[in-house]
Image (cartoon, rainbow, N blue to C red; front, side, top):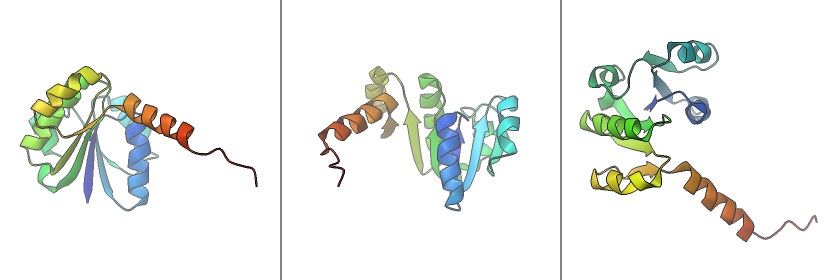
Length: 138
């Protein structure tokens, strides 16, 4: 099972590490060659240097064999474009990260159904922690 990430930020590295431990094939597409060099020694993933929103670059990751494409850069517009390109090239599932919730309705209109708004996700988790009973110490 091939999982492809666009962007090599902290979330990508943490998620890729867990997937590699599970025996998954991981490919990371990153524009910054220095970042690739930093990660390549310690992370057993494949790397592609380039702009993941470009069809020629994404094609190197073999979208027809990609089970999940995670678009996780720090730029909402870039993630949306990369998601649309990935979907059009045959990636089975595309996950789009957006920081600005005002883009969520646009993603819905474009048919991007797996959208993550990190602050909303974390807020829900924190609120859930407050709803849980406090540990008794027993």
